[in-house]
Length: 512
Image (tube, rainbow, N blue to C red; front, side, top):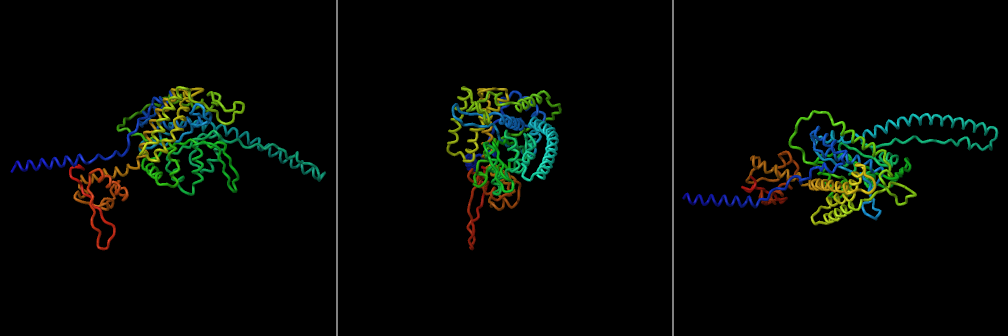
């Protein structure tokens, strides 16, 4: 009898082992990403990024990415790059970036540190503009007095001779108020953004502590004109507003850089909407470089003074970039005698070979079967991102003339980094489903769900964390069935008909 029982137990153990083998591991909630390549940063930026990341106990990504975007926004005022050897394909290095993390990951404080140098340029320009406005106020008062005197003299002349020519009395030169130079904008209407862009043809950096609000606004149908301006401002080029009551506002070159933070949940929601048509399916979201790093698992208390020398080096770079002219970086023009618009540089021969090899591999990846249209759209924007990064690194490091191979290779390393983060982001639509599937397994282990059978409704009506959305629960149950953790059976509908009910049961040995 004992031999029979032993054989029976062996059969049970073998069957359970077979079931476990059939059950496939659930996918990860997030795809793996590359760590930020600190060696790819400009030499003047690396010590500063390391210092801030260490003092604030955060990932270096949250410092490095906003710092690179802010530097690129200044370089974009001076020079552009032609990524090919002969064509006139040109890209300006204005970049958009999304920094992804929860509210506890120090996104906002680190971004403030990263943008301190650009904020200093903004404050300095504001002080200078205040002095210019004081001078203008004196000139405007003088012009007003001259106009009043001219009007009196014209009246006297007409009293003596009604046919007298008094036009000379009104030919007063009217000076316009000096525009305020801007580097950073925050919360503003798109009409005001257009006005500031028209006064600052070099471009601006839009900084949003949380980009969720702006993306939500731009997704609304009534805000289609604003969305059109933002789309144009990533590419650059002329843009004109024609409004009744406001007249015509012409922007010679609408060029906008952008950086901001966003939490994982809202980003995943926006990404899912890019596959559903409508306003979010026009490539605006895909124009953003995405930085979604893994967070440190350990923390230590750091209480020391900031590295003043590292900070000073960053400020010195931004001062140089701000004072730089196209000629200072060896830029060229198609018509050297008529230097209109931004000058351009190309890749040096060895750097061009690196870029062409990378570009060939990128185009092959974009044509791979199975790549989602949203991800393909995002990766296609790297045709601009990588040359823009290479130009920025070249200029920040003090380079002049063709972009060298050192800057190109560093830009390619950054491109690989950002591509891995893009892949994480554009697969994040699966994250709530996988998280819900794992939560259901935990409920089975704890006995909160009946292993012998339960329904979809019995899960979501409990309002458990992560399991309150019926659609997410339904998707999660489907994942558990297809991966071999649950069986699914259909009950017969009642005499009055109606939708059938599906019952899910745990496959013993597979979910433990």
